[in-house]
Length: 423
Image 1 (cartoon, rainbow, N blue to C red):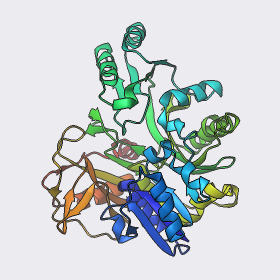
Image 2 (image 1 turned 90 degrees about the horizontal axis):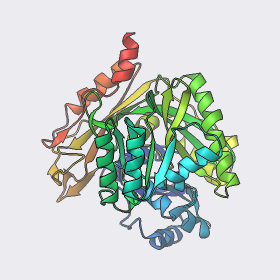
Image 3 (image 1 turned 135 degrees about the vertical axis):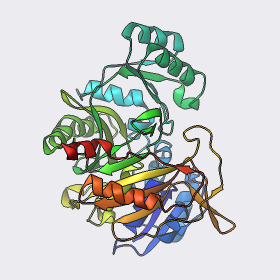
């Protein structure tokens, strides 16, 4: 098969690394890719917002299958454009991608199909939103409705913090994403990420993970796109997985189909495990970042047939096998992230990959032949182990070998699971 991967981040590097291992692969392209992805695929300089150019490239190179990594092209309708030319694609239609593109849309689906989630209201102006917050009190959660690169959510512990989040949204901090806000009840529990493939009718549960959203140790500081993750998540017991499939995933599949938006791709369900059980925080319509990195390290099966089955409607004919090992990834970010940070800072050395250890590139580029950091989240230092403690020790040992003066990382990725191990 000839395959094109869309994207340039750490998630896409992990997908590229895993896809390149498939014996089905004959030619592999990535647009635009990054220096890490270049080890596995031929990089193509195409603007991923130019859907016609992507379709033309696929025709010119006789590409059989397109894997879309990030959410923005899906919300913008790239999958629809490719399907119009009979090009198989992994990823939902623009209509189905509203599950991530509009938090209000997702909450309305939850309400219609009795999917457990926090109580909510939608607002398109600040005065009414603020009045609702004052009436509800804190803690409370404020979300920009649209895509905000993982930064449009404020878990406000005080009313003042929530009111400030409303101002951020309506005063343009998140661009068009903040034109509408969703305000929802604070859910108390432990967060987990659950991944499930879907072909519109059938579902295949993948694996669980736990992300670390806040920038500082001990879950302090502002939210980020994710500072590290590990898989599996101990809080997701077999019972919780079964309940998530029954109470959240299956009603969503049914509801999307009945609403005229059949979903094909990957459900990334952000969950809060409360005293009641699993409750949906949000849906994403692509693999998580950095959760994808730990999932790919644990996946023993060939990834390509699994993704292809989503596109072909044959997901009931495939299965996924997973390693029992734990995988853990530490995100190295540019100093200042998630605020202002310097770009094009030099990375002079990286640790070598080995069995069960891999450095995924998330925000890097080559400038005059030298590796530089171009993004906020730059490297994903990933390792496996028999326990979370072992995987954590290996990952941080590797992180210590990175020579990059402008980089920093959290020092406690995996702390919840390690506390469980002690018990």
